[in-house]
Length: 157
Image (tube, rainbow, N blue to C red; front, side, top):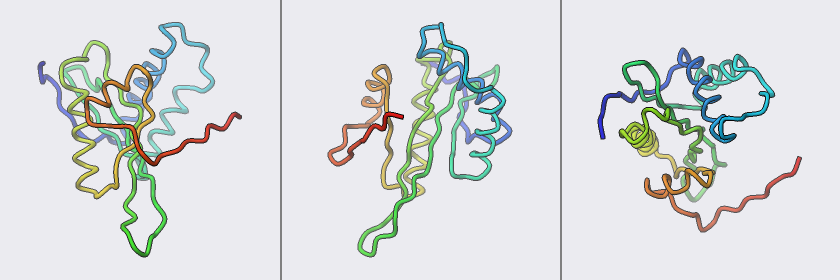
């Protein structure tokens, strides 16, 4: 494992590259044969820039010699005030991706470690993720486990 990368907090100015990586990430779900996009890359770039600017979403990037090669996003989910317990936010982890050429070099672990350090220092209640079949073993290796109390109601729209 090499460490020829650095990890830092993402900035709104990174939105263009983050949108490109998001499109690459989603193309992997289609084995290189993705359908025609329903929205433009520019729309994704604006969305990411807006969310990183307002602070409700956070992200970390791994940078190698040729620029940003990976990222992970965190959405802060507020909880209702409680008179008897803390109501610290929960962190929703998503869009965790490292370019194939940079995988197995420690960038992914370093990204998630930066996110976890932030979550601890910010006093988040915990982190949640909806992993794919492919990413579930990775998240489990990194300490995520099946919750006892979380339920989901899929809505067919």
